[in-house]
Image (cartoon, rainbow, N blue to C red; front, side, top):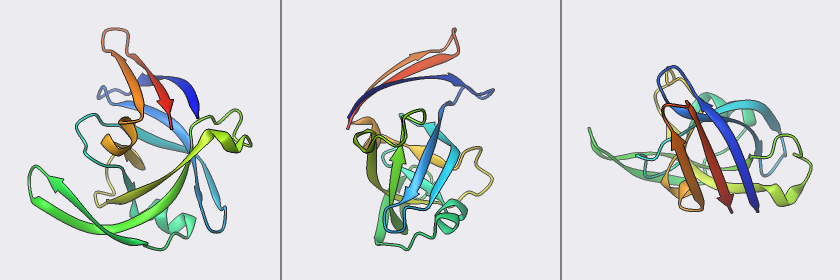
Length: 138
């Protein structure tokens, strides 16, 4: 999949995109999910509440390096990610990722897209213009 997505920065200057996500077993879809692009995060994470809403079951245990707490373990989920929300029926434009659990329910987004996502992307960040562009090659 080659896709370019433009987005804006939220009031805290987090780069975010609205995505669709789905359960890869049941194809249950949630639309309009806020995903923050975090260049400092090693991995991708999903809130437990969104995983439950999609009916996801853990597929593994997830170990992540947390700068405050060392190695942190959580449930790991397989989740479908649809970036092109205007042409979401085009099955060539989605990715399936393993994501750990985002334990902080008060976090201002339902997902963090970190290094395991970004290693397949070019990311252009324009702070003064409050916008960014992601060129995904998944």
